[in-house]
Amino acid sequence: MRVDGAVVGNIERGLVVLVGCGEGDVADDARYIAEKVAHLRVFEDEAGKMNLSVLDIVGEVLVISQFTLYGDCRKGRRPSFTGALAPDEADRLIAGMAEHLTSLGLKVEEGQFGAKMSVSLTNDGPVTILLDSTRAF
Image 1: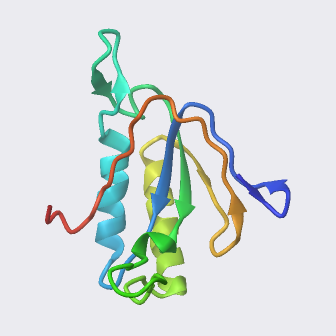
Image 2: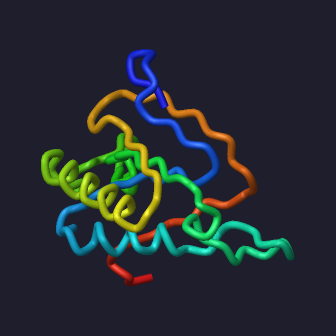
């Protein structure tokens, strides 16, 4: 990941986590998502089944703030971001999430909050997962 041409975050095998924080999100939500990310079994075992977590493979995590995940496009033709958490609060929650992942023993790299970032990734398999702290799916 680059900001103004400089590398600000780089991982090898692991997870790229795009994080959007919305109105009402609190520190407990950030910890919940960090625990989910760390323990989610999305890596293949020796039998080719998704049975291993990023902790199991001694992987790394790249955490990127992405308020545009809260873009509401239901009305009109331009997304509304009114559901996104205020930037200072979101920055605090995302930093807390990254700290919790680190405390679990993971190598964590972070994007630069609020910056225009250029992110490159190699997706090793067609896996994209949506996690929501509301647990209301």
